Image (cartoon, rainbow, N blue to C red; front, side, top):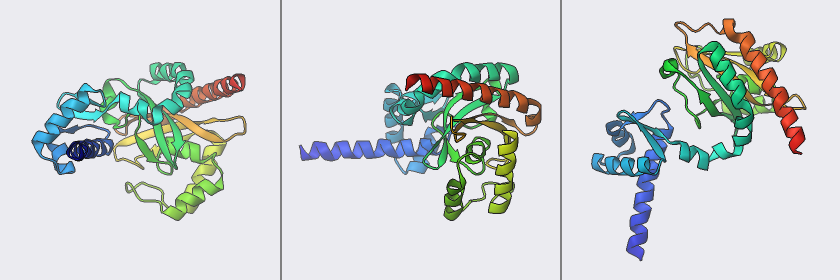
Length: 254
């Protein structure tokens, strides 16, 4: 019995090591890179990856692997299923209008948690997936939420340190505060290569009945061709419509 328990613990530990590696890279990782990052033998990685894929815990796309939908649903995804169900018509309409990657994100543990994503052929330029987490202070969705979260939330982030993700990341608290004030006035937040070089994003918050931001939707695309100002009005309109619908839905559920 003890031998079986030790073996099981070893298998679980190795499987979890692979999941941690995959969770750190939204764009997918091949077997060789998984082995290098996890420190596990290639044969072990190949066997565990095949088993995890069969269980739909991870997904295989070509030669790369990603965290699977089932893992997301077993974790934080189910907590936001109701919001996703209400939001889907708005996200789909927005995608049809702009034909760029559309996200729905919520605040979770001081970070943005992406709970839905709609993308087309150009999606490879936007390395996000459902279940991906990003900072609040340097992403469009995060700043849209942060602008309506109260001063204490920002103070906590500042106390923890605002890490510079790219040369364009705003890490000065005073400048970030001014930007959040503009977001409250316009209802629009922008990320111009602040989290990742080559990626631009525009977002708008979903406000609850008390005017607090708990979620936001966004549109992202490569900086080389994506012009967020041209679709900003569409993003704002979708967020306003979804926000009103979500408030009504919550009121009818109480």
